[in-house]
Length: 610
Image (cartoon, rainbow, N blue to C red; front, side):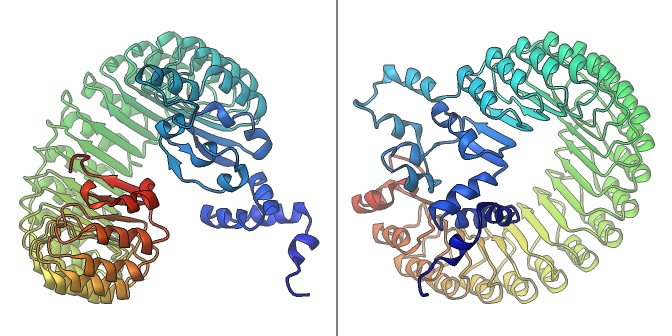
């Protein structure tokens, strides 16, 4: 019979829940939940992961609405969901996920809050110890919990939760001002804990971390410590003594020295990931890592000023399984250190060199000759690395898929031609302010790298329309950023529009020669476009913008500040023609009162005084 709901009348709840459990895309699950009240209720029962803003207002209903929740992330930086503002329409607004500022929520009361009330009102919305205790009571089977910048949570709330959620395996306390007693309770109660993040937990001291290591040392696999001024080598010695299964360690502290890292290196032989930003660590600590941590796969060194090539040589000699190396602002490293890595770490797949001014062409040549499995290379602010280095990479690294070049003033077209001919699996190429790279290099990429989907060429003055035409003929781009390439005009962007119909993101900001013709072609051919940046394009007018947005109905974000040809009528057109629009960045004077009323929540201003 026409109009009869056969699915809901024939299928029991258990079968629908089973079907929902096989939907792995969040957008698909959300769409299913909007079909009817029953599907909305049943879909919630299959949710195992939830991320929400930090407010106590709905913590009591979480266990009943999401009975199978196992992973919960509470982030105080997130806005309050809109449905909390309209309790008189709970079902309708619970379908929505549009965030609003906390100040808007506070203004819904009987009177407008004054400045004196702001702190008290905000505190009343934030997650408290009582809310955390109630959360533990309602969701005792939680496996992963994130409390991101929940500043009102103290040791009392954490201890209460730890006593109830004894199956907890991952805990993120970033930005929480918890003390030692809370961490001690976690160590005593959560015996299955594997991951712990203590970044910016300023209230902790060595006592809390030592007790935690004693309690969960046998299971702990990942530990992050940053900006904890009272955490010293004593804590690291306890970690080295009790956490023999530790696999990931991230340290950012000026209070940790060689002694602490030596203890970790000697006591945690299964360490696989090590990230260090400790200005008081020297070569001796890295030598211990190279000698003892033979399973190390990822090493990231940030702002190191007290170690030299000797430390990196120890890593190359000992850590044969190293696959990912990041070197940022390591001023005393030279080509010899990179040579040791290339010679010893043949399985290297990812390399980032950022601001290491003593590393030059020769060091990267060694990488190109020896690391044939390299898939990602990032060179940032490397003025001493020239074309010859990338010639070697092009010859030897056939599996390269991602290349980032930022402010590499000595790299030009010859290097890009070598990369294009040798690394034909390239999928992502990002170049910024490399002024020697021009049409020749980019044309070679378009000719040979047919798998390229992500291209960013920012402020490269020698790249013009011919380069984009070659890219459009050879590649099917999803992402394109040509901001600041002044030689690019309508012809290049039109070629992209016609050759890359799958384009989802486009940044053409600061292109003075770009006009309405390109916008019309984009609207006609790129229906999948979701984000577009048009800022500082002075020749684009309301006419071109209208052609663009009327066909690109999937558009979610449009940035168009300092576009002198776009008026309030153009802004209104964007808002009215794009049902999925979430953000419009524009000058305040170009937004009419009617547009504010219709779409005030999606309008963002570069400067409130414009």
